[in-house]
Image (cartoon, rainbow, N blue to C red):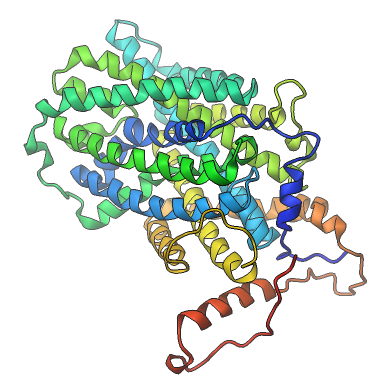
Amino acid sequence: MKFNLWRTKPIKDLLNEARDQEKLKREMSATDLVALGVGAIIGTGIFVLTGVAAANYAGPGVILSFLISGTAAGLAALVYAELASMIPVAGSAYTYAYAALGEIVAWIIGWNLILEYMVAAGAVALGWSSYFTDILRSVGINLPASLISSPLRGGIIDLPAIFITAFATIVALTGTRTSATTNKVVVAVKVLVILAFLVLGFPRVNPAHWRPFLPFGLPGVVQGASIIFFAYIGFDAVSTAAEEVRDPARDLPRGIIGSLALSTLLYMAVAAVLTGLTSYPRLNTASPVTTALLDAGIRGASLLIGVGALAGLTSVLLVGIYAQSRIFLAMGRDGLLPRAFASVHPKFRTPWVATLLVGAAIASISSLLPIEIIAQLANVGTLSAFIIVSIGVIILRYTRPDLPRPFQVPLAPWLPLLTIAFAGYLFINLPRLTWIRFGAWLILGILVYFLYGYRYSILAKQEPKIKRPTGIPVVPLKEPVFAFSQLFSRLFSPARLSLKLRLPRRRPGP
């Protein structure tokens, strides 16, 4: 059997699969998508990672960290919007990579998205647990330390994290409409609570807490941006809902860009007030907002903010489970994972096997690992997804210029290239230990691919059988090389180049 690591999946096949007999219900509007994105974006960064990034990396300069991360995310949002409008199919960056870059790249990005969503959701569940125990403590109820801490923190297991993960899994399992309605309610509560925090906290801000503004220097600000970056994955989650949107070509770009624009200013405002209420070393906790309020003497409001944080983190967790289950659905449908992952419940019309598996994995991660390790691991998957999607936009612009693009990235290919540079810079600034863990995860993923996905890929089964005595997989590089040769020949004139790439002209395919 001929096996081509770089084979791409025809876009028409992707669109046809979205209309098969097990199709998901198209019930979501543009408002639902904005709420979905805000539900994932506003939450983790404000209620959990702001404190970790300020205490360990950036100090009060975490305000600039959010600006850097928001800029990179904004560039990536435009890139995602183009592909989401072109290919309104579940799977997000994994599906886009399969259409533009080939199966091996699609597998790697899908494998990284598993790390992104599961680990990020684990951080959210852990933050929910911390706020929940703070609220109970404020009314005189103290849970045993062994049941609210991970083994690496001296405990046995984190039961509140398991509880909220089970609740979010059930909601995600019972249907798209139930999930969307629940999400809109908790998002409304969350935004109101954040506004209340800003109103109550701003008069108590002590500018002395902002000095020194950059205690770890500019490198610390950049590292802080790398750590908090996964808080912006909400618009990525919007693209995973493509098969459940009424008018995806119109509404997906609106949901992606709108949710990100609404969130970035709130992030920076909260970071400024938070670091002005208490000294930044005090924020090294999974519940920094309530900690800052208590330190500033605003005790009556800490209970309200804590309840709002619980609502906000619940929406982030719900969106994380929703998005990851749809990526599993796409990978199972392509044969790269067992077909059971693509199974849709006959009553709820949701990928029930994938949803249950995701919930179980998140419960395990959140109850056993500390917040620092979880946050670092999540960002690797997010940044790699942004880089791959940006490359995909460039390649499709030059290999498939005939495809309809309801939304187009402005200033292409410069803006996608800038997105790659931004994300790559944050990528290399992650801690060294994170790179080691990521390398181990990537090696494991490649092994899984060649042991399972290599054998059961739907595209592999469709290719004609040929005799090859060497038994070595065929790895043609024509598509990527052609695309980038065309790109650089247009960006730079021959007079400026000592070498010009020349490849046979290729007619657009059907």
